[in-house]
Structure formats: C-alpha cells, structure tokens
Amino acid sequence: MKWSRFLKIFLLLYAIVGIALYYLQDRFLFHPEVLLKKDKFDFTLPHKELNIPFDAVSNLNIVQFPADTNTRPGGLSAPKGVVLYFHGNRKNISWYAKYVPSFTRQGYEVWMIDYPGFGKSTGPLTEERLYAYSEQLYKLARSKYGADSIILYGKSMGTGIAAELATKHNIKMLVLETPYYSIRSLVKRYFPIYPIDRIIHYELPTGQYLAKVIAPVVIFQGTDDGVVPYSQAKKLQPLLKPTDRFFTIEGGSHNDLSTYPLYQSKLDSLLQR
Image (cartoon, rainbow, N blue to C red; front, side):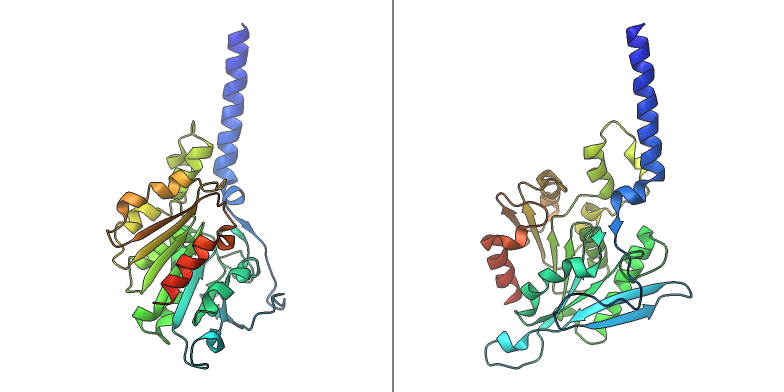
C-alpha cells in the first residue's frame, strides 16, 4: 500500500512538472526585461540606436557602439570591422553593454540586437524569428563592411543564434562564450527523466550548426559554469576544425569569464589579427 501511494504521488508530481515545462517553457528559458520605445538606455557608452520595422507589428531594436579608434596605434583611423553580438537570455542590451569595451578598444564597432520581447524589440518569440532578426543584423552590417571584417559573437543563448548565422554567410570569425550543444540537450541535464525532445519546441542546435561553419571558430568556457555546464561545451569540441580553438577558463562561471586574464588576453589576441 505504501509503495502504491508513493507511486501515485510520484506520477502526479511527474505529470504536473511535465505540463508546466510544456506550457511555461518560455518563462523557464527566457527572462527578458521590456522597455518602451521612449525609454533611454542607462549606459554611458557612446551609441546609436536603431528601430527597424520588421513587419507590420514587429520592431527590431539595434544599438551600435562605435569603435574607440583613439586607442589604436597611430591615433584616429577607420574601424577594423564590426562585432555582431548576440546576448544571452536575460534582461536586454543594457545588461550586456558592460562587455562592449573589450571589443571597441581593439578598434571594432559592436552592434547588439534585442530578441522579440526583450528591451524594445517586439514580435513573436520563436526560433525562426530569432534567426530572422540575426539575418537582418548581418545584412545591415554587410551594407557597411566586407564579410572579412565581420565577427559573430554569441554568449550563452546567443551562441546557437550566432552559429546558425555563421553557416549561411562568410565572416571573419565565430566566437562562442559558454555555448550549449543544443537547448534540448541543456534542458535534459536538468530534467533527465522527461521526454524533452517532445516537450521543448526550441532546438537551437549549436552542435549541428558548428559542423557546417567554414570560418574560424573560437570557444570560451568556464569549468564552474552552473548554468551551461562545461560538459555542454566539451561536446562541441570534436566538431571543431584543426585550426579552431577551445579555451578552458579554470574556475570560470557563467557570467564572469571577462574577469579572467586568460580570456582577455586570448580575446585581445584574436581581435588584434
């Protein structure tokens, strides 16, 4: 009788959690902070904001941070190129602006987009729309820069978006910080007893895309990442080309890799090429 009662309770809880995962997965996966069009970003970095109508009801918000060309040898000069930065699943562009100086001081512009429902961007939050917004950003970059001056940078959730874009276009480099093998693979780590492939309708299969990327690829991953485990990034390593690089940041967690000298020195070296 005790085992029968325990089994009934377990099955009930299993069903409740499974149903919640299915219907509330957007809340589980995404944690946006919405802004109104009239709101001002609170960062002090020089920037230009663009709002591009994607369709009749959707807006794509882009913030462009200019290169700090004064820090380059010889003084003022043209930017070396642009970094298209695809951020993680939290808040909006203002949360990630603190990472911009790592690129601008090396002579690169940084262009960031917000995903649908994040910041001032609107529209349906679907995997297809994430790819469509990234494609729009790339087209805008190509109107100013050659393909060999464009770096795609993905952080956390943005790694799958950046990797997908890299399969379709020529670029200088693809850099992935704290990448996952796929969203479903990541969720399975937290809910191993559920049929995640049937429950989660987002894929973002970074591994599948990475195998098709021709451009140089660089991965940064910390060993103490409690959000995207180190094992997720290691699953990507066999997909890298012989000339690609995988940098392990010992003790690094999910949001502090930029504070480690190894990360900064390797990133500087990549951007100085």
